[in-house]
Image (cartoon, rainbow over all chains, first blue to last red):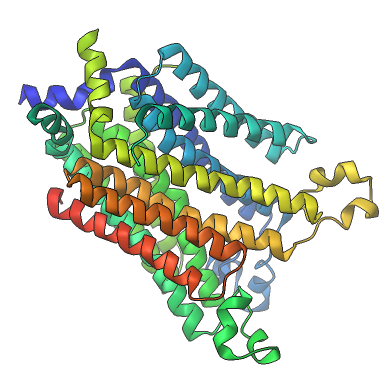
Length: 159
Length: 159
Length: 159
């Protein structure tokens, strides 16, 4: 028993992996938050896409008018999709990077910049802030993920 | 050799990790199924988005009329995107959770509720069932993922 | 110290895992490239979606005309979403597959077909090539992911 359990906890005892786990949980929770923000805007703006979602507003034309797009809802949805497009590569490449034996301080720098950049990106998208706020925060997260991918490929390349 | 191979199989010999692997494979296969359902509705409803996909229906106007949106196709696509938004956090956070040393029974409870909730969500979306069926199944998967993230951050927090 | 470091590098010393890491980094980088292609088409076609992105083109009506959809931009975005829908299952199921102890040659065959299929899919989508180019490259990646999921479930099934 102890042998098996020990194995399963050793990865999680590695400090670089702990940092990866922490920042991955944070950025995934931040991405999940976008669902709640979408729901909030759908309800307050009364802008739905599925007929069954407007049933509580009555039947027929009175409910149908709530089946519409709203600029605020669409903005959150674009932010959510942008999260998916950027956080998925971070989670996948970040895991391989954490296993590739980087220095703890270098790894922390990568993870912190990425998490900070994505939180900035969300504020820049939702407020919205004037460009290039959103562009730069997107680029920072992108560059950090690219840098981790480079380290992974340099360490393990096996084609 | 045996040392290296042993290491690589030890993670997979852990029961919590086996459960994670099983439920992750199931929900990812379920998500992949959405592509087939989309293709089915595109073909039966004759509703395509790429001009090259309608070439077999002839040229010019006769093919162009099939470049249109269809409510059934759009419904499946929304279900597919909702899967991506919710299954990605489950796969990422679930992996870290499985490595954080939870009780097997607690882990199984989390994984089973998530998989059941996402399968329910798909039926609720595609049939469609009246609300709050879809809302509740979405919320159950969301809550379970949040609970796993809490356990991960409590175990490994390294900022 | 050496004990802990050794553990963290053992997974990465496994050749199947090295191959998984290599091909996962490649397909995730390919997916990330879609963001740059989208930005390229948005700028050259002057087709934006966020008002704050057109501020450099002046104010009022002169900028508003660039808030529009463009067929090339939409095409790249569809390719990007298709990547997400297919590369996410590959990354998740591929990790479990790599840990399930497959033969190196079998694993390499799976990873190479997937990466090749997704690169083909991108060319077929963006050029675009006549069907069934895009359909077949999509199906090849899908089949390979399905095959890995089958191996995972056969090895670890724990419901």
